Image (tube, rainbow, N blue to C red; front, side, top):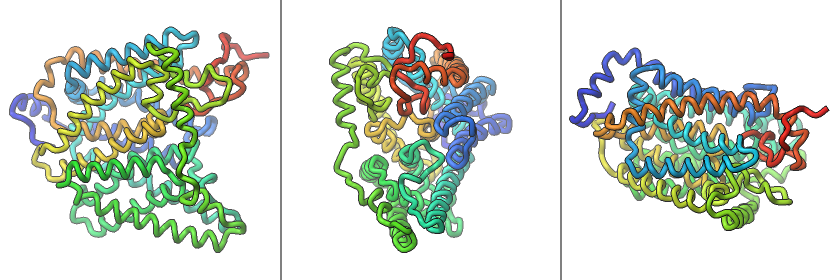
Length: 503
């Protein structure tokens, strides 16, 4: 654990007395988040639902369990309150106004349920950041090791499944490529989004396991496997986001780049070598080779995949309704052409669905929190020699996640949301606590209880929605399902006022 400031140190010591009672729930939280990512990425957890919908239900159930744990366990609750109190007054006011605008925009809609859930999920996720940060403060380096081992296992398991696909293709005489890959994700891009969060953290293996024989080689191999998947699926968003964030952190915190940069560079080279080897074998053994390269690095890259069109639509929506936008989850609902359920950008999503005022508040919040985040990276905290480089490594993930969200809207997907909560909470838990941790305890406690109630409500809503989904699909006037927003096939623009199953 890091050294703590003298002010309030007695409170810290009291909180850490008899850690046995608090350590288990703290480690259980990080294990549950990492295990969710591992198990849902390698198995069909609920076979009666689609891959995406099963992950959503399990995600919401996991959120409830984590939030209830934070309320039930005293030490975890106190630590969570401390983390919630780290926000300054300007940030609190801006966030409250931002959420209020989202709720107002939702309530004016005839069908407001999905819109309200879209807004309330933001509150729930923000509270979960603090719960995970509190868990890291209690569990210490045990949290780091558990999270890193689970994320490493996730990458290995997914690669093994992918390689089995190549083997099956070679034996069967067909080509296994992008279109067949990542069967435990509704779309290969959803795993690429998960890679945006996880790839930077893998470079922390030599940092957290110093002196272990072969750990550097293992780190490079694990990174190579992940970079191979990025290359073979032509994941432009992941590549751009990671390269920009790595370059920025290498320049912003140059004293820490020796801990991660050489491993990432070696991992990229290893990924290229693995790709070249599989490509050559594929060319030799496939009955009709050729599309493997064409659908990966050989595909045209100089295009926006329709994003520029989607973004223009959101600007038009915001101009038509500048105060409150079209309403959360309503992107493209009032048009006669098919569009995805979101504009593939968190910024344009807020502009079009929430309006210009909410967008201005979002930028204000981002500047306030982002400036503190970047300033804190350059400050030296604590006596743990691994803590400061680990902060920089986690910062790469967080910055890459923000960039990717502006390019693809990755905050919407269940696995990406869980990864974001894990890594944001991890980073917050490594930082020093504020010296005024307990000044606003009642407000923080209310926020924790509110987040828990919201988690329960959203989970109950989701369970009820599963039963009503077939009826909504039948009576929908949209002409068919839309692509993911809350459900894979359940989020519809206009399904009528009746929830009764048609005869």
